[in-house]
Length: 101
Image (cartoon, rainbow, N blue to C red):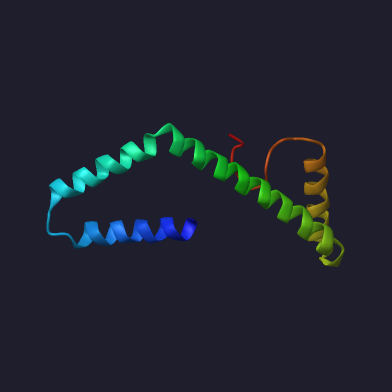
């Protein structure tokens, strides 16, 4: 699905940049894109995809840190252990700088 969206976005960008229809057509497309982005169904889908991505990132973090935690240099291993302990204490925050919305 992500690749299709990327392809469509590239196609639209190419059309906008290459079109001879001018500013009027660009404004029509911009208005349509804004209406789609403001649609509650689209926003809910985007938010659920972001949440699912954060969950997968958390799982990957724990899987990797469990498998390679003891094979890393001490400075890195200490950081991984502290992150693991903080996440198991139920802080509810992720380590990627994103909010949990």
